[in-house]
Image 1: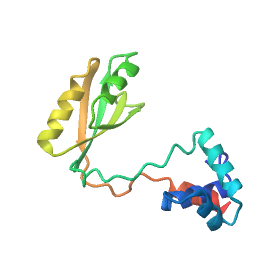
Image 2: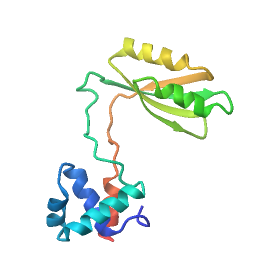
Image 3: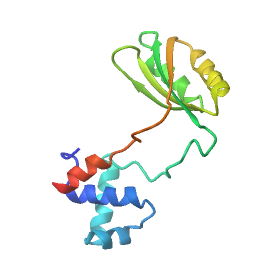
Length: 157
């Protein structure tokens, strides 16, 4: 990450991580740089695909999806794109990663409870070319998804 970002980029991203609703002018004030500098940095970070937007952080449990599960899927050879497309059509599928090791795809999904999880798993298993699944239920999330430590290390350099 440090080869893609400099300390100012990292400080700007940390600021927006903590306060995503800040405007460009306020970011410039807090960072002690010109407004044009902040805007140019944001434009460059967006163009390079580092900054993808400013979505709100949503609590899925508070939205009624209190159960998170992970599934390792074995799929038919050469069918990853088709299976991924079908999985993307299942609303409760939050992420799909192509992997090495045991299985071909790693899927994070949510459900309202155990019965609802069975319904979601049935949809996943029903996707053509899914050969086998192994599902685990998350009991807790001791480390939430994060990039802060990487940004902080870059900001210090």
